[in-house]
Length: 313
Image (cartoon, rainbow, N blue to C red):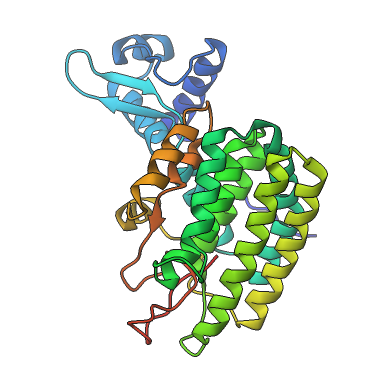
């Protein structure tokens, strides 16, 4: 008979943190609302000041509250940022066997539904951002290097994600996009012609998807995105893409690596699109991820640095 490890009881600060979460739910608190003062929480839960502070710190690490000091200090409810949630997900996936094939298998299932669900909600600002993304990653017209073009390939999908009203589907696809930015790389021997071919295929699919979306043809958008994802998976296999490193890059490291390098028109369009409620990805539509010799970029080798491997779309 298999032996079971005894369940360890939660520490007092962890129990208090759970009770504060319950309090947030019962009072229907939203981002921007303040928690009761430390002294009030002490009296309510009958614990020491140190225990309350540990509990609040735990909630801050989880991204649920921000803590300020001083006479008017205390805890304030905040919206959990995507990169913090991504970090927790990566910690779990660190011990799983994740492959490029498994990533693209999930994309093939989710991206068509994500794009189809976004169609009725796309605004003119969204279409402008999508079209600008296409022009930036077109290898036949763009003056951007191959690395920037592959970044824009993923940004296109971020803009669609921002327009989809389903928060769980949106989050899942944004998570996959971040994984692609960080971890999928190609070897230095992958010919630039292959990257250009991949880029041209993406531009073709993206253009047809935008055309169908402007016509509000949901079924055509779904069919095109399904074909696009199948084609992208074949291209990654042909180009011998691989996963670099393990899925445990810290969220704070992501913020250090992230820089704004996209042209101003794209940033302005994405900023307008991001004014919708609960659409964090649109703010990243004009942002890119850049690394310093560690995983966290797009999947193309820099033409000026042939020995460097970089991440992909």
